[in-house]
Length: 233
Image (cartoon, rainbow, N blue to C red; front, side, top):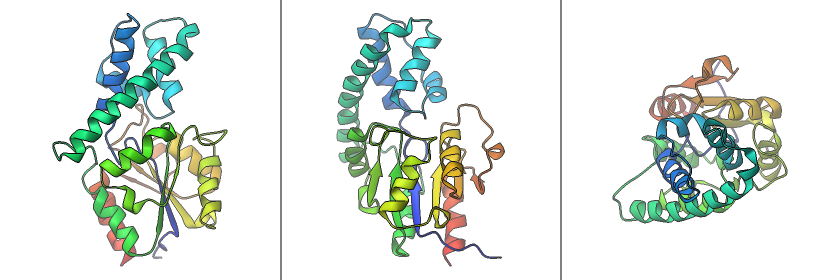
C-alpha cells in the first residue's frame, strides 16, 4: 500500500541537515585550552553530540576525568566560543567558500515545500544559534518554525518538542514525520506517536539505527531524497 505524504516534516539539525561537528569541536577545544585542560579529537566529539550542549560538555569532562563541579562554567565558556565560531563559519558560508549542508538537503526541503508540506526544526542545539545557521546555509526559506534545546522545559528524547510543533501546525502526530540521525530523535518520535526516518550519515554515537524502531533508515540524504520523490509522485 502506498504511504501518504506527511502534513508536517520535522527535522533534527546537527547530523541531519548539516555537518556541524568541525565547528563544535573547534569551539570545545578553544574552551578546554582556555581552561588549561587537555584537548579532544573531532572523532570523539562526533560520539558526544546529539543530546544538547550540556551533555556534550559533561561527556568531554568525563572523558578527561575532570570533576563535574566545573560543568556550569565550562559550559558557559563553550557557548561563548561556539557563538564566535558560528559567526566565523557563517561568514565562510555566506561568501560561498564552504557549506556544511549534506548533499541533497536543499532538494529534499524544496520537494516538500513544492507539495505544500510544512517544515520545522526540532534540535537540541541552543535556540539562539539556529536561525543564523539556517539563513547562512540557505535553509531558512523552507522552515516555518524552530524549537531549540533551551526553548522548552524538556528537549529530545522527550516528545515535548515534537508535540509542540504539531500543535502549532494543528497536525496530528501520526500525520507528521520526524527526520533525524540519533537515538534521541527516534525516541522523541516514538514518545510522540510519530513516524520517524533516520539517516546513517549523522551522529548515532555508535548505535545501530536499524534497531531503534524507525519506519525507514537511509544511508544519507540523497537516498532519502530518492525515496521521497517516489512517495510524492
